[in-house]
Amino acid sequence: MGVDQELTGSAGESDLSDLDAFFESTRDERLVDFLDLLRIPSIGTLPEHAGDVRATAQFIADRLEAMGFEHVEVSPTGGHPIVYADWLHAEGAPTVVLYAHYDVQPVDPLDLWQRPPFDPVVEGGRVYARGAADDKCHVYVHLWAARAWLETRGRLPVNLKIVFEGEEESGSDHFEPWIVANRERLAADLAVISDTGFFEGNHPAITIGLRGLLYTQIDVRGPKLDVHSGSFGGNIQNPANALATIVARLKNDDGSIAVPRFYDEVRPLTERDRDEYERMPFDEHSFIEQHGLHSLFGVPEFSPLERRGSRPTLDVNGIWSGFQGAGSKTIIPAEAHAKISCRLVADMDPESTYERLREFIMQVAPPGVDVTVSKLNEGMWSLTPIDHPATQAAAACLEEVFGEAPLYLREGGSIPAGATFANVLGLPVVLFGFTQPDDQIHAPNENVRLDNLDGGLRVVVRYWQRLAQTEL
Image 1: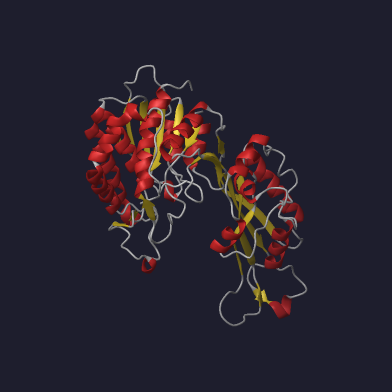
Image 2: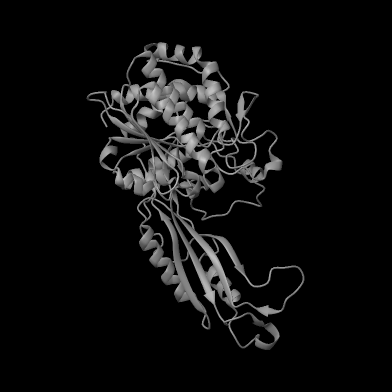
């Protein structure tokens, strides 16, 4: 494609020429506003930045109120606040719940930043700062897309209910309870989430699916204290050895999961699904080189992208036991532990998956130790059909602005809001954002391309117009 190429327009662009002109005339003001937003160190995971997180929420709320949104609220939760606002005067048009998050990741390691993380720098057509891509750029895009409609036309073509979260980077612990408590005022036809980006090569994309999560811990205990390996070795079960045995039995040699009935609920890929995966440009050699891998590994009957987006996983996230210092210490450790996560795909239930996993672990556990399995966290998957009218409307707008039909992605990770909107509010969910793949989110020197965001502004104003004409 090329977002580097001039952004093209086709049918319908002339209808919105006044909004496009607004974006051109406000270019300098918009950039200043974006940089001001990025300067606030809203690191949601660090308690010492709680005031900055709230200041960011107020920054956003002030702008929503100034442009004419109603019921603007920096709404308290048990943690960082949610910014809520609505504009509900498009009679007969769909109502959309719009989501982004304004909290950001910590900046460590600071010495790897080439530019200060909260003193944004514009360089080479990109903005460098923590939060530039994840996810303040999307807060900025939606604020200015709404402002373009309201200042140019005096109205929005759809009804919007804005929900901007402040805890996405720290686990969204209070998000779902807030959604449940506000279920009635969040009644809508559709949820739109902007916390995703384009595909490798900067190809426009729509994320139609996110995997869910099951996170567990295995605890293996033997003697009440660490004991001498010479005096006790050969007579007692070593908890570390026992844990190694358990972990080894969870996967087969080809990478498939050995837990009985683990795959029973997995929704099979359709022919259309596999065709869409085939459309995605994926260079295995480049991927291996980019990430410093030895090779790719996984169940051979599925492609790497299919394994990432549409197949469940089981992985050890951490494992620890016994002596780990320099030199030697001859002990049999009293206990051993492992963190195990499973990514879940369409139709899988976290609870039944957990029970199958726990039961299998107890079956394969060697004798001579006590084994417990605990569920630490879970999250549901989400999947919106490619042919859903809201998805197709987004695709048409992306193609109109960027000159290329979007790819349809199923991401391997999880966004809690997606599952919450789908499962608590019963809404179809469309996930689309505008960041480039090399944005270095969560890493030093995070950045976003300004031409992607300029195109994103034009996509969003067109999307609201197209949704107003769409039967959802």
